[in-house]
Amino acid sequence: MTPQPFLFELPIKMKLQHAAAIYFVAQAIAGMVWWIAISRDLTVAEMFFPVAYANHDMTTFRLADLTWFVGGSGLAGILIWKQSRLAYPVAWMVVGAVGYATFCTFGLLLNGGRLLAIGVMVVSLIGTFIFATQAHTMKHASPPSP
Image 1 (tube, rainbow, N blue to C red):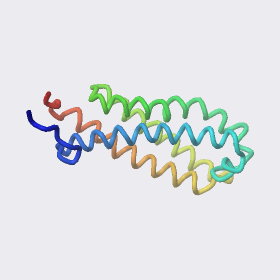
Image 2: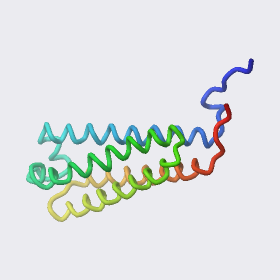
Image 3: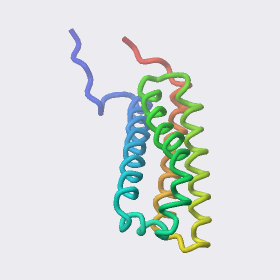
Image 4: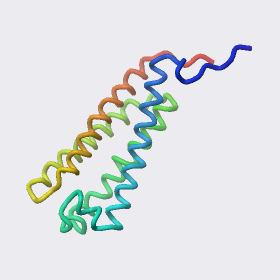
């Protein structure tokens, strides 16, 4: 009986697949925690945007963000982990959602938005883009051996 290999002995594509799946799930959790934090504490919300936006403009964006950013990231992570053929389009849908949210965040600068919000969104966009490319390379990888 051959012993099972440890994670560091797996082929590089397998490591990247797991990293991408973990990234997307972590991003979904972070997005949910962020929405809860800004909804419950205006001092947290004020770190990202003017408080005047907390009650109106950000509320209108909440449903879309929870659906496409939080839900999409979680779904992408699960699909990448399972090596689903749907992982690639879902991961790139999340790139689009994060790109749109980043664009909107830049728009908040015109109305007193905070640089922290832009910084977080730019980092998220870069990470999402990088790991979505891993969903693409995974699509072409050979299936794991039994």
